[in-house]
Image 1 (cartoon, rainbow, N blue to C red):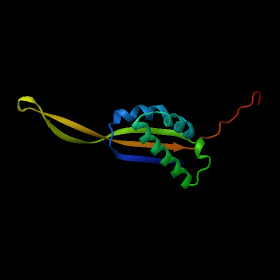
Image 2: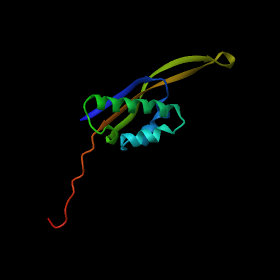
Image 3: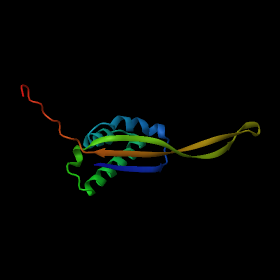
Image 4: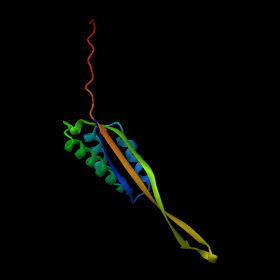
Length: 120
């Protein structure tokens, strides 16, 4: 069973968070938290909170061994953009684009590997 968590309309550019989503995808949940904990970036804090929320959702849903669940999917999508105008020289105007991100993390239980005995 898969458990999900998301942070919609996070006030950070998605390109700043995507690197951390790529870093933890495919890892165990506990190892993903350890990887994010020592990153000094604001984007790492945001995705760490979403991962903790997915782990709490799994625990609330009755999953066992939440720390050893695998991060199946971690992706960051573009949200809406706030557009502001900044005055420039000679009557021109530059647009300031303030970006938002949608952060999604899903974890799933790892199936135990079947052992194949040689000769049988």
